[in-house]
Structure formats: C-alpha cells, structure tokens
Image 1 (cartoon, rainbow, N blue to C red):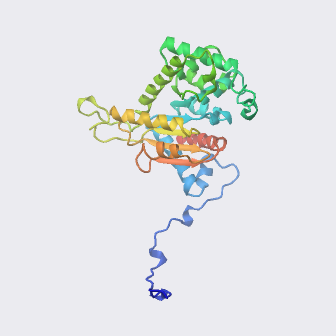
Image 2 (image 1 turned 135 degrees about the vertical axis):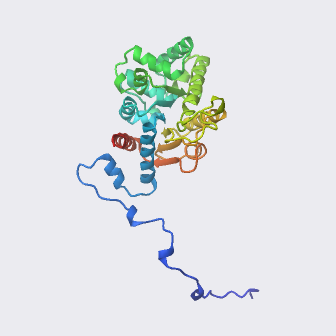
Image 3 (image 1 turned 120 degrees about the vertical axis):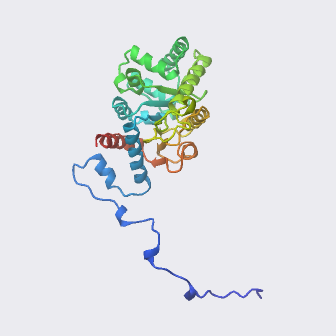
Length: 338
C-alpha cells in the first residue's frame, strides 16, 4: 500500500487569462508574402517570412549596406568550399564595387584559387587518389607555393600579398576568375592563415616551413589591424589622441565580419585577432558578425557570432554557398542603391 494519497488533479481550479494579453512569437503580419514575376532580389528577400534564417539574412544585408554607407570595412573570411562551388565571381564583383574591403583565407582556399587561376580547374577525387599515394602530389601547385614563400621572405610581405602579386605578375590565364588575382589588381588585402600539415603543399619536399610560417604570421598581424578597424567610426578623438577610448559619442554602424564556409581555422584566427585588437585599444562594440554555412558548427557559433560581439550583433544563416552568395551579393547591391 502507498504511503501517499495520489489523486487526479482537479483542473477546474486553474487560473486562466485572455489570449489577447499573451505575448506571441508568431504573428500573421510576419508571414511570407507572394511576389510577382520580375521581382527584384530585395523584393524576394522582403517577401520571406520574418523568422529565423530569413530574418538573419535581412539583418546581415542591412548591416553590410550600413557599414559601407558609414565607411566601415566589410571583411569576408572564407573556406575552400566557397571557391570550389563556383562563387568566386560574386566575391570578385563585391570587391570591384568597393563593398568587400579585405579577405581572409585558410591555406586550402588559396590553393584552390591558385589552381583555378592557373589551370581553370581544381579539386581531385580524394577517395581515389589517397589509395595509391598520389593525393596532393601536384608538381605545379607545390612549386608555385614554394616559390611564393621564397618571394614573401625576400619582399618581407605576407603570404596573401605574395600569392596575389605572383598571379598578377605572371598574368595567370584565368586571373579574371581568381579572388587572389583580383585582390592584387585592386590592392585589397587578403590574408592566408595556414595550419601546418593541413594542406597538400605541406607535403612538398622543397617547401621552406620557416618562410611559410613567417609569411602566414605576418598575415595574422595584418589581420589584427583589419579587425581593429571594424568598430564604429569615432566622432572625436579622446585625451591622449586615443581613437575610440573616452572619445565621446560614436556615430554610424560598425564594420562587418562575414565568415563563409570555414568551420575551424578562420573562426579561431578571428577570435585571436579580436583579442589583440581590443588589447591594443580598439573599440569593437559596434562590430557585426555573421556566418554562412551548410551546417551549424561549435566554433563558428561561439567564435564568430557569440563571444566576440554584443548580444544581437551576431547572425547565422544555414544554407548552401552557391545559393546564399548570389542572393547576398544582389541584395547588398540593391540595398546600397537606395
């Protein structure tokens, strides 16, 4: 026999209230709207339901447009998949329009961009070539990067600048489709951040690891400066000439860091660059961050859209780059044309 007297609860005693007094997360005013044939990109985006990914996408587009109107930088950090699925033309166009002002690559992104610039093709079937030991053993790519590291050391420049300069100087056959070549032509900084052992070129016997590391470390230091300028433009200069410290009111939006397709390396690099920039006095409270990727990842969530920024300044959209980036490019162009 139970020691407790368990009886069905009499629910007639519940306290209720009118639905008119309840806070609601779903509203018919936020439902999707139909578009007509010939609608613009912005009309399409505005027609999307005002929830989740569509809402975040609109905020990212608005943040980029606002940043450029207030002369703040827009930086795209990208993994190799962005290049491999044919999105370079959209990035290059944003660079040429002055919308994207700097880029950050990991090593694989640089490799695939270089191969597309020089050959017009890239990316092997790893499942096949890994079995006979031929994976990554491409003479031209290995030689290109070995030479680039030597040239970077001689000129005391970062890896990104050395690659871009070499592609422009050699007039690579497909340089019009290369983000790095476009950066060299336009004078836009591209930083390349390598993790030793992660890229095929690290298997090359003639690669100088010291020169590779030094060039990539110089790029990290350049990136720290770039990230340090992602805050809002200060309206005054405070005591001692410090910009953004005790400087009074700030105006306008901050810059934008958009991480596209890098799940580990670039989010980690970004977090360290933010720490360096703030340590040296940068005020990044107005900075906006965003992540475009096919999946949600721990480091992109924490190191891009949560930890570095104030609440509400980080956004995430899950989707395929080959769908998101064309839409993003067109939407930003239209937003800036208003």
